[in-house]
Length: 257
Image: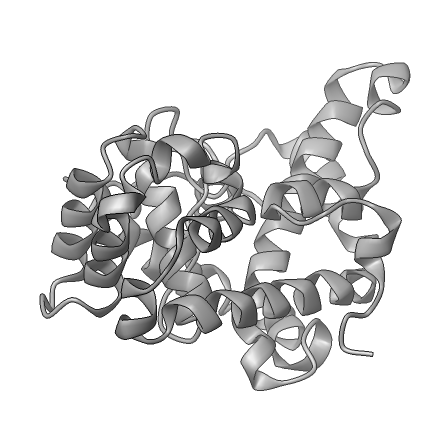
């Protein structure tokens, strides 16, 4: 549990964290895996990206939380292929420096601000090549407020600060490796949350989202009234919202059956 909180609250959070029913989150991992499969159909091959239609781009952005409400702004220039080319360069560009590719993507998608743009880049990278790239959402690390689950687990954001958003994305990736090497949590990524090794990246996503959701619940219960605490959604539902998944009862059905 986070060390960057007062001792009594940390003990309270530790107790709350130990009550999480991790296996109840397995459907979320499966849904993230299915989302990746849909993304890969569209983005895994450069020539497929070039052929994306406006309807396919809108469908792609619909499943990305940071772009969902602004999808018309993001692909406003899709008709001339600009968005397609920006995505192709991000995912398959010849530039070896990932930070440079992210910077180029941000420059070519100026319809949204850079903070949201790098989240979009992280989503595209992660769900197209989940074994190679990682997610970065503001609940994981917000450089402006210096908050999120990673600073909590790392006892601060010293290891996360970068000179650019691209460099910060790389630091977020290294931080994820660090926090998932905790001995007591390894079982979650090796069969506890995911059924196969291919599920491991999405088990990590679910672990980080659940850890932060548990922190939000714990702080709320610690500092505010029980009545206010009751208005928060159930933990799995909050985790789904954080990861951009549907929160209807149907979304909990095992999509692999």
